[in-house]
Length: 293
Image (cartoon, rainbow, N blue to C red; front, side):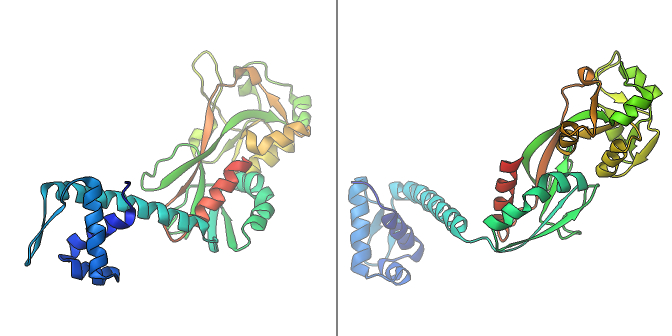
């Protein structure tokens, strides 16, 4: 006969309470009922778990081994029950999400309506920053980070990756011509980032490697600003595909030096502190967002 979880719980309670009567009181059962359950468990195992005298009970050697395993099993079952209970709860409350302006505008905002329809009791609080922020200081639950992660104290969930591509407007290319080689970029107006400087190291294969350090003609701190400058014919930019594919499809931007692009992709993660109080809201949002990316 298979053991039942209630029998293991009763056995643990008897050991922890020190007697059948004390365990019965804790479990709100009769002493005879506790005794019968313990006897059934021993019969199923084919061994004695406890030695009983009129004054005390002691664990047998087998009882000691079984106690450790029973505690692990019961704890695992309780964790599983709690997980299902949490998942069945209706997610409610405020969820603060931070992302760079391009990711917010192109990857989150278009799906906010569908998310609110699916989870009407989650109140989204959306902020944009083009630099990494301190989650605690900014009172943020989730931050979307693009690029290499450095803060090991945060929990990180991979969401997707982005391809970088060189782009210019048709107007700019008519006026200045399209570069034929990577070195030709030195003759063009290149739009760079204010910081971090690593974003001005473009993923291009050339005779000296697969990254090309540009000399920007001018810089901007926001990827969305750089996108708009490129669309308005101010130069060549290197932008993530999630914010520029629609521009290419609709003819506002044209890809440049496609054959020279390396296979490099920017990793995109959601980072957050573990917090069981808001974990259901976080998991709902991240699972929903990942399906849309």
